[in-house]
Amino acid sequence: MRKGLAMILALLCVLPFFSARGDDTDTSLSAPKMRALLIGCDHFLTQPDTWPAADSNVHLISDTLLCDSRGYDRIRLFSDSVGTVSALEEAVRDTFAGAGERDVSLLYISTHGVFEEQTSNANAALVLSDGTEEEKLYAPALQDMLDRVPGRKVLILDACNSGAFIGKGLSGGADRVFFTGPDYKVLCSAGGSEASWYFQGADPASGGASYFATVLADGCGYQGDYAADVNADGQITLTEMMRYLRENYAASTPQAYPQNDGEFVLFSFDPENDTDIRKAVTDITFEDTLITAGKKDVSFSFTVRRPVELYYQIIYHEEGAWRFSQAQQFLDGEQEDGTVLPGRKMRTLEVDTGDAYGYAIIQLITLEEGRPVLQGARLLCVQPDQGEVKLNVATDPAFAPGLGQELCILAQHDVPCGLTVSILDAEGRVVRRLAYEAPSRPQQLSPNASSFYWDGYTAAGERAPEGVYTVQVRVRLGGRAFLCESGPVALIGDAQAAEETENTLSEAESE
Image 1 (cartoon, rainbow, N blue to C red):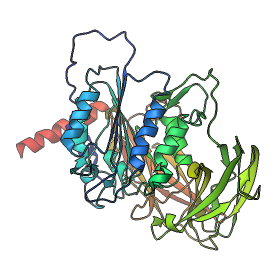
Image 2 (tube, helix red, strand yellow; image 1 turned 90 degrees about the horizontal axis):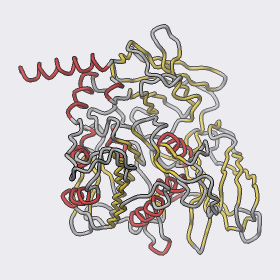
Image 3 (cartoon, rainbow, N blue to C red; image 1 turned 180 degrees about the vertical axis):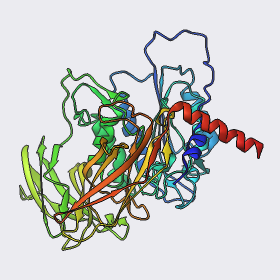
Image 4 (cartoon, helix red, strand yellow; image 1 turned 120 degrees about the horizontal axis):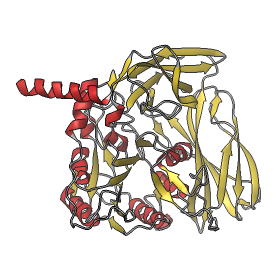
């Protein structure tokens, strides 16, 4: 884990440099303008080709953004035509030209991501390729491009190891801080140590896309069901989208910065307009996704909107990887031909875990014009029915939320389990509960762990005061409770953080 002062120093080293506006027009009273740049790479020189998945992704995201009621002033798509960092820089400059301090600039990239474990997260890279030229894009270079764009930046990375770009989902925590502060909103399809998955990417006849882009678009109402809008107010915030992704996207662990932002609107629509729901299966509900080894039956319900051919796919996690090539498939047996008629349905599947514990994914997939369409998925956490749980909690020693920092918490556990994670003040009182019996996920961390992040706010939504806090992790297994607490964590105020950083810089200069 990095030291507290190193976190602050790294943050100040990447504070945005905002370029001047291209004109002198006063836009202080005008509505914010929205622009989007969508990049997809399918043909590579050093990586497996993914055609047509990334191309499908950029068109899927474009179609989704076109439905935003606020209206995008500009949406540009580049599919297999950005193969160098300079080409991306040119596209960023041209797409976001004229952006003002109140505008929103969205960048989506679908490509391969690469990262070597046990190295600095600054070494994580996205592979840019047009099939002829290929270069790696690192976080410092990408931030340098976006820092020059005034206003708020929305960065959506759909790639393996993409969480490393924001220092999340890493075995030892991050040693560099990128894309922080109020002007950045970031979504990543996977943690820094995880793969991110496409489906049907190698078969042009079947279309194909990434699981992440599909779930993201569905949550924003691409098929008419604005499922991510929990409070039905017509505005899908970053927090609402993260909750939806975590529940419905099972193949890896989506990451976001900031961890909680219930104010920033990622997508907007008019709830008064009646929208035809084109999605075939909606309102998927599982009785429980945290189950005990030995239990074979998993029950769930869903609503079918129109007659459709439906099947279920179960993928098991073995030896540190999802075994998609060995997935089990079951055609729904309501009709002899596999067709399911409209209405509310209840189903029970047998999950073959034997007496072992681990993880599995259940996917609901329809066949439409011969093409598989993902309707929904859930991650199952299968915990042991008894035994010991080896717990440990690793955190940074200090953080300064006023400077946009979040506390990285690695709750280490040697078996799948349900985790309750609480922040305690110096008197041992709970000031924030980050998770309550939340099923763990296979985040590929070493040692095995689940990552959590505290933004420094209390349960009441107020900034926690400066002081010393601890993190408590609790697991219940086989009728027993296991408890572990971290060492002290210093929540540093802005003034103290600035003073310590100035002292650190002075010491570095004198050396």
